[in-house]
Length: 383
Image: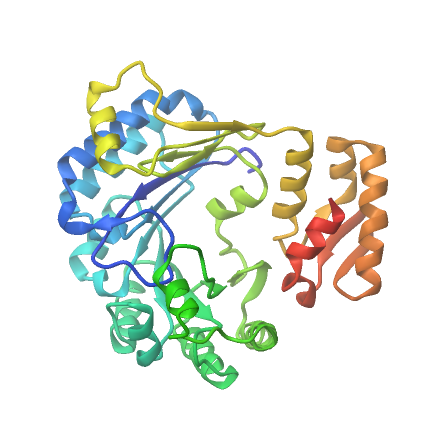
């Protein structure tokens, strides 16, 4: 399935923005669902040529909070996307908040072809949920995932660690409780203090204490071991899955496959050198794809040079637990660059942060668990 291509749809509406979120979003009260779905399908119609109908593809509807989209509009959107592609996707994911996991929504999504849910649980500690600005509590999350499991076999749940005031014991309580829910996939992210978020402002004003880096590393290692004992394999920096349930869509990003992004602030990549992004402006997006912007460009664009391509290759491939084969790197970037890569890798291998394994088809480079936590430094050095 090497030719899998991804279709990403950004739904930028939320009931309330979480304090850590730096994604483009607006209040759901501003949503004009008829116009928004029409604009998405209008953009799809104009850009359909960028994806090949000869290849299997995935759909991922994210946000924002796409589970807020009313059922009738979701039916229209999903049917329009698949009609434009001419086939059904090999994987169809929608992100959902626990409070939106109702019988009506679950039945609608299943009937529309969705076969994978990504549920934003984050934590089962009610105090932390309130601090983060989440609208659900632990009981809502547990009941929602239980209900969803009657409709979907493939469910992923999000888990955050390194939360303010969180101990390793509290984290492992979350991990064990989430594993007991038996989702097929768990995405586990360290809390990030992004620029221009409420979380970062609270930290800078000394109203919230950031978790110590050493504790975050210990949390990561303890979480990995606990999930491994529960049957989950870490296949990417932040993602764990039962065998056969790795995210097909997200793996495409890490392998540099082509994807098309629809919606305000959505990004696209042609699989070669060109990246594009739509402006983070809902009103302008609706005006443009309602037909008033025909013939004009509504995107920013950049072309990756050889150095940028090489850096991106190492950065994305090292996110994968299996790393990448050196021969593939050599084929793409040349013998001299491959020799430099191996020389740099040997320095980190001696420190126990990277492995260079000999396989039948050549050498393979990957990060060790401790190396994952300092991957930015390793990648910068290798480049």
